Length: 199
Ligand code: 5GP
Image (cartoon, rainbow, N blue to C red; front, side, top):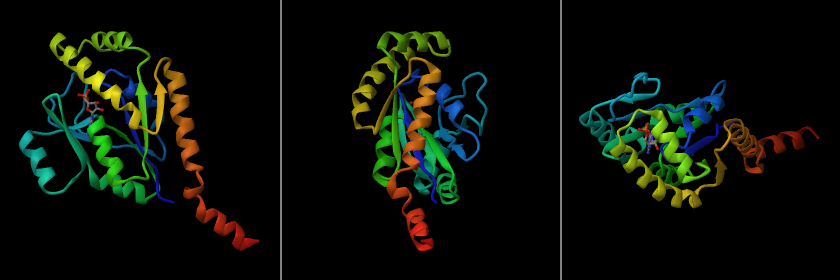
């Protein structure tokens, strides 16, 4: 059976990194994005992102190598298409950690995907998380908060909303969504056929 494509979006600081860390493993793979953003301390090329130049990114777009891409606060971010297609064909589930413009493109191209929006419990908590990270300047944080408001408006377009208050609860919720999606009738038609054939 083809794997499940799972989009997880949240505003910057919404905690998707921590949630995703607990979801990936085994047949649930993480799609490493390409970006023109500079690496933050501790970020590893090829693990957290493929860090590329604008020129390299634009070449990938022109060559049709991106499943989706977007410009976010002055940098390109995008999902390389071929690993996603390969893993889905092999039956692996894939997590795309992307922002809302990219999520809309994926929904259009692959409507069978599942989209989850991780919502911070409040704007105040979001701001605290962004400041606490200590990796961005106050102007960048201000920019991210403004973008976050627009992004949260878009949460209505997602299939599921998970409030990321306690990490363990958010992880449990996301796992439950993945399990339920995999048990949906349309993904299990073949099994029904097989059981009926044996009858
Ligand atoms: P950050 O700079 O904090 O790592 O990411 C900024 C935003 O870009 C986040 O909302 C993140 O989910 C999003 N993002 C990361 N990779 C991709 C991608 O491949 N495509 C799109 N559209 N957004 C991405």
